[in-house]
Image 1 (tube, rainbow, N blue to C red):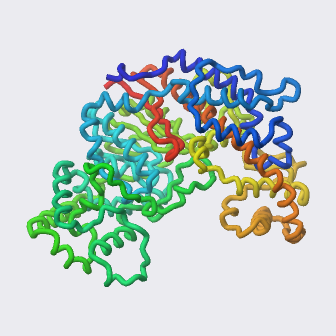
Image 2: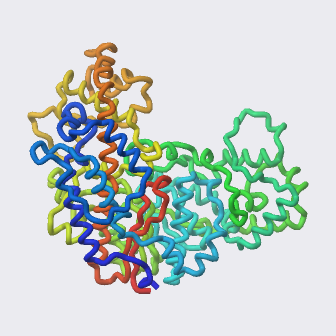
Image 3: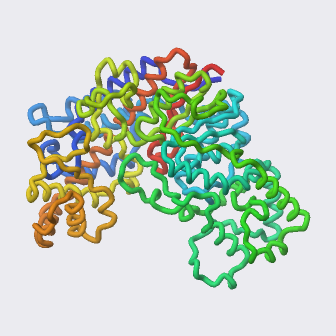
Length: 609
């Protein structure tokens, strides 16, 4: 079966990696520049010889056209041989697009994989709507990845799934309830595990609903529609808790209770899935605010539409229920709810707290470990490569589907900034091919890899205002307070340099103005902000306001490079898997819509069934 899937040859992977290495080495001065130092180090004048307007213009034009150039572009024309400044913008863009993962032609289409799973086609249209208890982004990821993992479990005939970096358990709970899989969700955070346990108790009584045959629920749905069902097709909206409930219909009451209850959502429904520290609009919203009605498919089963009676205990609506449901239907739903409540709590899935490394012995965490599928949905930093190492070293793991994120948290074996850290398993590189070359990317470039080109192209994901604030703040730190070096506590700093931790954090979102932002930041740095008047602070703002477009344009250049750096990281992981002897098939699969989920590529590897 696996032999039917398109996958690049090992030679093709190495050839593409060589092309990437040449391009990334040539453009390292851009990807490795930190925007915090943009004005203090005159980054634009030093590295770019074209106008900011031309960069912003070509970025807009390129996002409207599809790249079809298949020959390797000449990167020698991009930079001036004398000044090393970027002089040929068109060649830069052309080379960046050529070296992106999709244009290298190294991905296996997910449609091709699903075509080989006959049962997958039968179930695809029967998926439940999850947007009632997950935000749109998380719902998109969980549904697609669950389909893929369930299909793999069927191939191997296994019922156990190990979810590393499970977080709050969205993927784990959906896999267990929708596909009746035994899932262990492992996360290093006690907070996440505790939240998952609370969610587990809430979801326990609903598990019968998820096992309901799609045909039966479809009939039930049609029956309810004929009898003016309790729940409207549109999703629940935010409600005012002080509103007069007596004037609401039974439908409104039930919808209100479900919107504000803890059932089927965590205390904090926003997800930390994007790779950078920058805020994302969709990640900062509550899950219930993202539930738009989707009536395009009548066969889709809404989560709320098929809840058994009693799942939500609202005494004030009991009278309304009796008007709609027949006595026989009420009794049937009541019995289903009683059975679900009496099931053991661990039936849904088991959240476990443990810090996982490449050397972790799973038998110490999971006592009944058996043949399993290993998954990871947006596993952070080194956890993604360690997931692959565990997969290759444990015979019980039959397949792995890993989607990593947070590349800036990867440890690098050959980065001189980390040379004093003692590690046996580094996040990058994994493959012998790159180890032999002692290749390293660098933290700033890995930060650039976290940018999302597709999302930026539609006006999301790049907070230029906060970046501008931070860059101007750095000028103030240097000129007024003599702070010339940022410290991230990676290695001991020289005694001759003022050591200070200049990570601002989330001060921007809590500041009313630039003046407020600067004063709060200086206090966090332990500096006396009274040395500056409000007029002094605004003077710095106005001085650099005219050059704000330079910062914006430079970040657009880094956005172009993001897919190339990510491609190198993922190809390194794929190359590592190809170097193992016990692997039957390995490939990269684009699982998600990159606008909804920027980290959309899964590293998939399979052993002999």
